[in-house]
Image 1: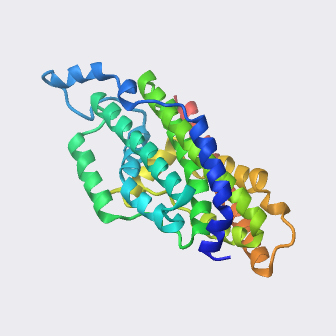
Image 2: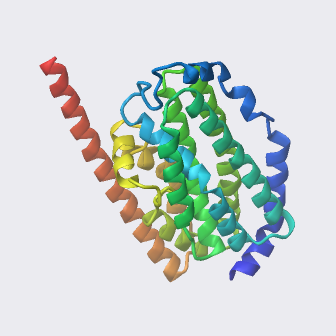
Image 3: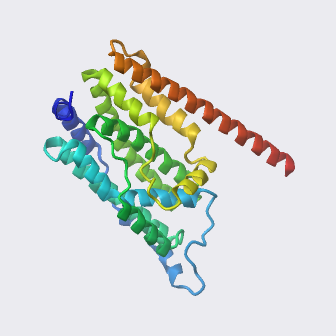
Length: 304
């Protein structure tokens, strides 16, 4: 089934999921969530941006999360290329773009009035990020919906974990609101993939294998992304263990039940075997990381 045929077959489901999304949407406004009173400090002598005390890794998470949202034009281009601009597909892409735009607005305003980042550094990074146009480019519509189903869940968890580590009620509320939105986006794509499995299980498993094995978050074009990722992982915001236990395992085994599918083609079976091996390897790496951190924490406790 090529892209055009797949999108035609999935269009009724896309329309159903779009209507479900719109009916469940809880309207909110970025300006209402920003603690504007904090801006008074910015006028006082001696105040410097980026001097607020943040837990280790949280500043990197805020920066990466915001700059990822800032690259919205290129994500919209990619989604429109994969799914087209007609019918429910185009309506969904436009709605998704509008909602994600809210995320960058509220995050930037919150971070700036709270003095959490240097706005000049933030803008320099934004210019590099958006000008480079480095974004995931799944080759087919099938790959695209599989990738975004995983990515939106990963983003939801990253936002939520960042919020819980901010030690700030206003910041927590902002990140929880974003996390809720991202979860609703995830549910749209998750259930599309479920329907795709019904239509052509083998093609879906092949796309899942390609996207999960080669998965990368959409912020790879951000300056210093590798270093930020290490800090984010060290803080426990998003790491191999989280990726394995809270994203891959629930989706592949509990939601899509890939291990239980029957009647796959030879290529579909080959892709499933590759996917299972990859998940096993990621699980082993995650366990080794967890063991090292536990040992380090024990040594630190003894030393103190």
